[in-house]
Amino acid sequence: NDIIERISEEEVPYWSLDKYLMTLSGVNGITINTIHQAKGLEYQAVILDQMNLGRIPYQMWNRSTGEFMPAAPDEVEDGRNLFYVAMSRAKRYLIITHNWNPSRFINIAAPT
Image (cartoon, rainbow, N blue to C red; front, side, top):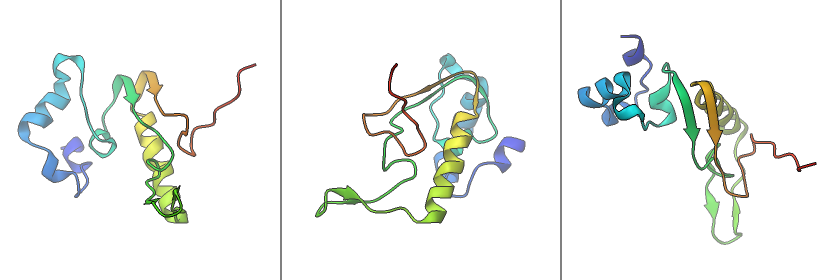
């Protein structure tokens, strides 16, 4: 019940009893979820793929300017919370992949 209560309204159509049971059991050792689907769950290792600029927080691409549209403050806050939820699902290992334009929430330090 605890997990079912954490499924957001927009994610409900993507869940089935089969997916729910497979998520709980970690069938084949790998579970693929959206961040919303992973709320309330924990995994030994989490891979967050494509944490790129414009994806977290989501921003519309303006073709005429070749830039992302600015995110509203509430969209930035929602993105920050979602990113935190995603990272906090990992018990031991967290791997974050991105292109050379990472999300604004990823601070890339120059190698020393």
